[in-house]
Image (cartoon, rainbow, N blue to C red; front, top):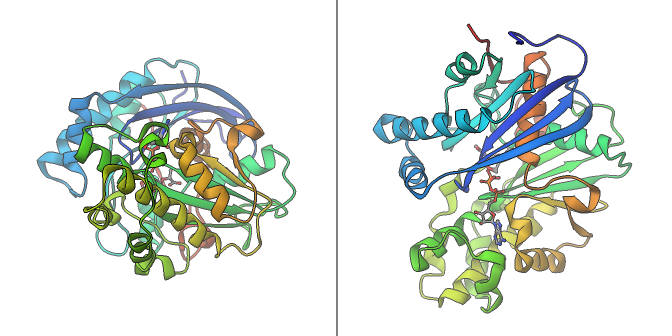
Length: 368
Ligand SMILES: Nc1ncnc2c1ncn2[C@@H]1O[C@H](COP(=O)(O)OP(=O)(O)OP(=O)(O)O)[C@@H](O)[C@H]1O
Ligand SMILES: CC(=O)N[C@H]1[C@@H]2OC[C@@H](O2)[C@@H](O)[C@@H]1O[C@H](C)C(=O)O
């Protein structure tokens, strides 16, 4: 069994991501040398139970304490359980669960203990991906952009393209595949676009006890309240230049902007806010991309997809149209990044997190 990973050649990495939507943990295998993607492998998913989700929700915004400890236990157990379904990998990338993120103040805080996981599994585990970037003045997020660059190369794309991830929060990566390396100035520009599904999920939870507006059915029957949308876009976050990042709950008061609206109008308006944040963010791209490739759970929402098609002036496609798996892209990203960290390569750049120089964050825990 591998105790440390080889310094060169293609290895099999297993990435795991527990995202801001708090729905569950994704895991996916990528064969890579840390530069090129050679192959995408098996994937898996482990949903959080209602009780686990309640525990995680209660810990959001906490920088430690009993709530965070309870959440850490849930995260560690769920990841260990998911990991036990895989046997054929050389290194694991373990993002953990973000509980709080304020890079300019307290920093960034993910729970999940990679050292324990390494001891349990007997494999090297790479974790704590964001802290070094924040310590060097970066946003600590988004980190998927270096992987998006590798995806563009894997797909043999020749023109600039955007990857748009619609999870709890939205994040956009502008990739120019004409550059050789993700570290080249101008190859990447990335930032969080604004809230994506989190406000709609919170609305559905508060008003109807549901986890999401499945297939946008409620939003579909509602009307967008343009006054609320304008107030949303007046938020100072949207006039800030990228790179920039958000905490899941930075926009949680948005739900108050739709407080007086019917369920359907509120859902339609919060969905429109997500699309409007993306449209606003696209104005920062140095060139109009050949297309916007959408990944993450929001791409399953046809109302949101249609709003994006109307408001963006380039084609909007699900990543599946190019053969990628939009449910697993983030887990794959942390598989890819794990290999880069283990090999001392950079995982973020001034254009992706605003860090002062390219930095390779992450901690490598070897089994004892
Ligand atoms: N069929 C669907 N209809 C509407 N919304 C959906 C559908 N499927 C998924 N979603 C939305 O996508 C969310 C999950 O997205 P995803 O798994 O990308 O989030 P995440 O990885 O937790 O978040 P992040 O990328 O912010 O870390 C769900 O909570 C829901 O809001
Ligand atoms: C601090 C943190 O966990 N941020 C997440 C979150 O979820 C989406 C967006 O906000 C993105 O910035 C990031 O995740 C992705 C995987 C990233 O780092 O690329």
